Length: 181
Image (cartoon, rainbow, N blue to C red; front, top):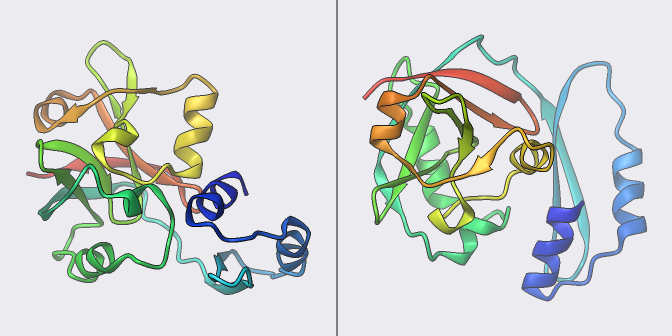
């Protein structure tokens, strides 16, 4: 809710917290669902659901050819304006579960549907800062708040030398990953 509230404020959209909570309370299912909550420009809240496919145990990850701009304000808000991300996700190479974007400074940013978490050689766990150009994911923020991660610019060299790499989002949790250049 905090992320939705921040984005609503940024875009100047009125958000009725009670109506939003009521929409979410009505969701019931015997299977795991992916729920997408949307807020229209007129303040109307919508919800769509779909079954959640189980994630594989370890994801194979590579780098996207397309770049993002670190100064793009749309990257910092979860919106339906995701053309590049959807296009890249739809064209994942065979055997690749996720592609990571770089920005114009060669900093690693995020995946098409995930944030990046890197365990450095010294054991410190880092995630790219928002200034690199990425979505402030819910799971990412939880891990930062719990002191499990710190923000740090991540480079391709950091990925090559990492002790471990994982990806994650609030839907799938943290996913161990292996990078293939």
